[in-house]
Length: 272
Image 1 (cartoon, helix red, strand yellow):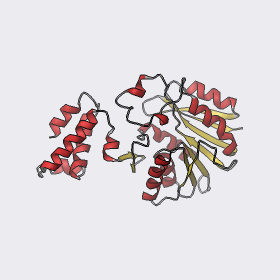
Image 2: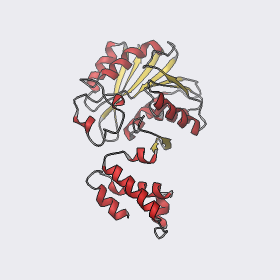
Image 3: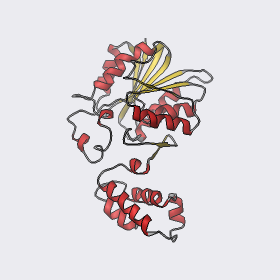
């Protein structure tokens, strides 16, 4: 079955072998290590049919995370759904940069703007339970997933349904972190099989891909405490524009960091 699935997925996925193993394990209710260690265990006709359906949906472009309902992020197994973006490995850099800057033993306030599945907020709270973490999203369906992820790990994250910072009191947060929509509206990737199953509103950043970034950069100073820090994910070619926007909105000590692929991915600014 695995060989068939690998061949079937080869034209759709650059990780056809891994996808096949994950989907087979999910169909059988077994771990990947169990599949590898005990390949001789039997498979029922119903399990085979379920596996075939999963593979065909993956061929159609449905992300593996939506098929299994799970995605690992920052070493945490999180629930996801088509109401949320699938957390990407490069977004872990957002978490890392906040954790680097959180003073030890200080109860900082952190706001995740556009929380989606809650991946960033949950990861920060999990690593720094002493911090007060708030996650904001305009989607009620996404916040249900986020709240479930927080509860899964017993984390007291406060979730707020709001259009960016509209429902947030000002001047409290030492950190605002955000992965806003930043794909250009005319980018063919938005209609590609790899992205068309994910929520458009979480990807579409307007004509230049900067609408969400502008909204966060312009709105963050109101909710940040003095000398507060804004940490943003952006597209591979947007670092210069983001740095200029940060400067225009009163941020200083502006820097950009690359992800593991060497791509400019996260920019940071501190309020003057």
